[in-house]
Every structure is written in structure tokens, then in C-alpha cells.
Length: 341
Image (tube, rainbow, N blue to C red; front, side, top):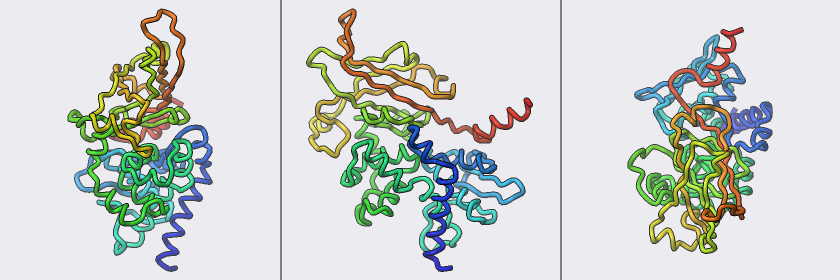
């Protein structure tokens, strides 16, 4: 079997897994990403998270197959590592340990196959096209690093992985992909926040708009959330939290720099004319740990009027993903249920 055929077969195996598990049904219900931990669980592969000094992850080929993932890494990289180790499992590889992903062309073939599997599993072209259609992103939109970053969050992969995925699907040429892959992600986040996030430089920053109401988002409890909403302040209307449906959250207007506030480029998602950005905060530290779907509703009203009718509504649906040390949450739940039966 040729080198190229081996990689194509790895991609086809990932596509087959997506079909066998009916992942499109999950995406059609509102989720934006493929969950490698859930796929592992449904195939009786135990996932264990722990901090590791050098390893990103490992696949253990045993009577009980297992995956070890370094949890002390950005969440997108954790997902990609899990998908890479799943590739070793589904492709019939033996026990292996990985200190890196995105192996070069001279790497061992099994690592290249696992890479191909991971990219094909986590970011199939049909999923990118679906998200772009809902968000209103054109192919040229992917020349904007802020949009590529937002795509990476919805896919649940790293920014670098998103760049090279777009290159493999021919949305970016090699020169632009190389240039974008070397961009400082901190600068990208700073453009969204309007300032440097000195409190937690590792946290991701989601920029949401009206289109995101169609999704069930899966941020980390520590992530920052900025919402871009139509601005009718000149007519006396302001956005506020609907207290009946979003206890535990509050919002504050986002202060943009003068350059961002005057930006006039249809492809940019920061400082768009006619919109105001709001930062969404979680007041209850335990709210994101409660599990299940959280809903945050906002209404645009004239707050000084006692009975002001809302002229617009916005709702966010989210399932916060916590990654602690030890077994995955799915594996823990299954074992607790088994012990109680």
C-alpha cells in the first residue's frame, strides 16, 4: 500500500466513524463540534486526563484499550490529542506515546495516519461549510485570523489546527496558512477583548452574534464571552439580562479602542458599525459545574420605563465542558451507575 493511499484510508476511516455514530444528527441538533471523548466512550475506550511533563498523550493497546491525555494544555489541543490517540485505536495500531502532533512528512507512517484521522474526524469539510453558512462567513472570511480563531473554538480544535485544516480544504493557500499560523493568538484575543487579559492568558475568548443562537456552544467554564448585538441606544434601548432565565450571569458594555470602534471592514468581526459588544460574566462560581444546558436570555428594552416592551431578544445555549484530572466525566458516570446497580 502506498504512502498516499495509507493516509487516504485513515481519512476514510474517520469519515466512516462519523457516519456509524450518526454525528451529523448531533450537529443538526445544534452542537458545533465532534466530541472525541464521547466517541471513545461509545467504543469502550477509557480516557484518562492528567498533567504530563513531556507527553501530549498516549494510546494503550491492552485488553481494555485506553487513552492518556495531557490535560495541562489548551483545550483545543487536548481534543486534538484525544482524536489522534483515537486514530491509533481505530487504525489498529499498537501502544504508542506522543510528544507532539502535526508530525512532519518524515515521521513514522502510523503517526501520520493518526494525524490524518484526527483532522478528518474533528474538522470534516461538511462541518466547516455548515458552520460558515450559519455564521455568514465567505471563503474570504477565512483570511481573517479572528474568524479562523472563532471557527477553531466552535470546532473544538486549536487555532493552528484550524489554519492547516482550512489549508487542506483549499480555503487558504500555503503562503497565507504559514503566515497565519505564526500570528500571536494573544493579539487575536486582545482585538476581541479590547484589552490584554492579564488575569488568564490561556483562556479562550468567544465572540458571539445573533447567528450563534442556532448553536449549543461548549465553552470551558473559564472562557471569556463577548456578545456583539445591534445597538439602538440612540432610541433609548439597552440590552439587559432577563433575570428569570439567567440567574447567575451579568453583562457589561465592552469598551473598544478607537481603532476598533471605527473599523469599517465587512470581514472583521470586532467593532462592527451598528453593534455594541458586551462581556458576559458568570457570577456563580459553581454554575458551570452543574452540568446540563445553561441558557442566558437578553432583552433590548427601555429600562427606565416600568413596562417597556422588548424590541429584540437574544438567547445563548451552552453546555460548559470541564476537564479535571482523572477519568472522563462520561466514564465516571458510567462507573458510578454500575456501582449503584
